[in-house]
Picture (cartoon, one colour):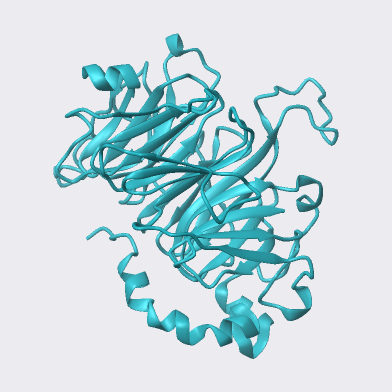
Length: 408
């Protein structure tokens, strides 16, 4: 299994290769094949987002973005970018995404959207923005449609979910703009703060509208049907704390979200019910990445299964406690626990190793207190964590200040 982590340390990228079942918090379960390679290269500004592009004109590439540059790396040479593109508009780019039609999209908090067709050998870099994407509070959520070319959705603090295309963005035309929910029981306006967006039922024709899920910093998950209503068809308070990340499970109706209080949970979009938890984190989850294999699987009974439906999956999380955790989506069991000694900003699953991750599991998937009891006096991170404790304490103020705001 291979995961590349973007961290806040000076080295920037950490290439982590390990076997499912690896647990660095228990010395006897630290796999001998575990390799954590730090890659250092000269940077004048921090990398803010990364994405894995498995298919480009030049083969698999890792893409990263800073405030003013877009960079591509080969997977076997992460010490130096293969290509560097300079952006004309400086912005704080909070996400970088790869789509099935071989496009890369990045979005900045000031409303700049960078997009590139990486199937083109020239890899043209284009930047788009409009007055609609610029607001006083900035954008905090963006999603490019995985299948339909150049269809995007965005939102932010006091910026409702908006669906458009790159061409529509430049011309000021939207396909859909959400309307706020009705006032609360005290007849007070409900504040808006979109934190993440996911397209559901992605193979639905555009003529039938879009089904979209969003999460908010106020703990809600909302489901929209753009052909039905501008208001959400389902609005559920899924968490008492700000939701910081949202991804899709093994089916459209099953979402996975993480909040600012170390909780990663399942959510049934069809019923509005909160499902089981992915246990073990002891710090706010900052990034949530999923990896799936699609199409007919030898373990499935129905050989005619839709090839757009995932048959297996894992999720990887990075938290304030500096631990990379990997879970089996179907069973919610933790299959890897690796301490990285740096705050994790973004994760890219390069090789999910589904053949082994389906059966691997490690103990300590309960509460952090249970984990501590099981791991003995060295606590959750074992001897390595004890050795690095002083270094971790030096940056605690910065880390805790980065926890998303809670609702007041």
